Image (tube, rainbow, N blue to C red; front, top):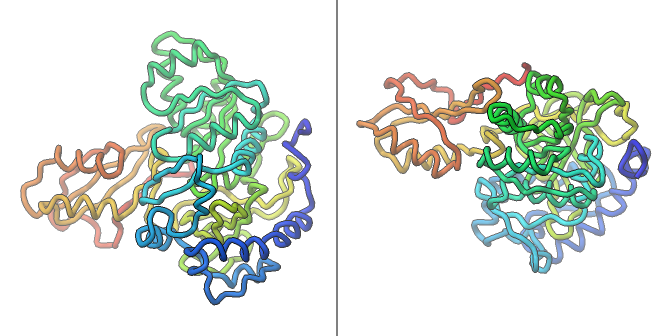
Amino acid sequence: MSVKHFDTDETRSPEAREKAFFERLAPFLSTASEKLPGLRSWLYGHDLGIRSREDLARLPVLRKPELMDFQARTPPFGGFVDPDAVVGKRIFLSPGPIWEPQGGETEAKAVARAMYAAGIRQGDTVHNAYSYHMTPGAFFMDEGARALGCSVFPAGTGNTDMQVDAAAVLKPKAYSGTPDFLKVILDRAEETGKDLSSIALGLVSGGALFPSLRAEYRMRGIAVLQCFATAEFGVIAYESADDEGTPLPGMIVSENLLVEIVRPGTGDPVPDGEVGELVVTCLNPAYPLVRLGTGDLSAVLPGQSPCGRTNMRIKGWMGRADQRTKVKGMFIDPKQIAEIVKRHPEIAKARLVVRRDGERDVMALHVEPADEIASEAVAASLRDITKLSGDVVIAGKGSLPNDGKVIADERDYTN
């Protein structure tokens, strides 16, 4: 590792990086499609002799509903995962539902890069407050921190008082988790007189790091950067900072991935700077995903980062190309709202509204009644199906907008 960069790969010329990726891609696709029936079926009839981004753009974009259909027909992985690679590994279930295999050394290294860019170093202790239950996020960060040479406290979610007590004893230097939960921990520590001043760095994901929240952390002496990550790839892109710790514009794409921005609903790349859907291709032999549409919106930020890393920059998360919405690090899908309505025939129409309450995400299910509704029962179903708590608001008949929205994200991402 250099002083400023994790390794020399981060400072390669863009031409050398692209050349290395595409030299590997064609033989990789040939081998993977022969071994994996789902991938072979998806790419059937397409020329796999990919030598450039233009060639890659001729392949279809695989979106998550299609991947879910493959998995439903051939559980659990739909023929997209090497069964030998799962032996001795964890299997995860993310909202959707989508099954995923555990990541490997490449994915852990991508997390380590993001942590290094956030100032975290070998020997530091990381308080990891992602959920270790069913989903892979906590394990990505856990393995990446340990690959960097850090000690990790697997805090998980909830149990705020216990987390505060543990952090007061372990005195971690870094926090890893959703952006708003760090504030919950810090506020509780102040209330109880516990000293958490050891926390000086943060790498957050799973939700928006609003400028006001980042500024509050800075006032408390904590430099917080964010990364963009998914269950399929781990860290896709991450922030870096200048010598004073001030975040630099954009997010740098991970070295192990190739990112495209396409026009939503198509596979057509858009010009740099235009907002579109983020599409990712990886060279993971255990889980070879080619042109997977994440459903997330972003745009290419032209030029290179002042930090010296030379890979493509994106503007970060800019919303959803579909109505799937991330709340407190968990995706909620319109299908889940439909499942609630199906479970409760007394509901004529439903719309989930997501807002901010201070620095926290909150949600409320607005329902038009077809019959008398027991709000408590609907709230229990909301919690059971989405794994998140929310209010239930009884709306007047015909009062919900007729705009096709099942999930309305009303959070302001500019403040």
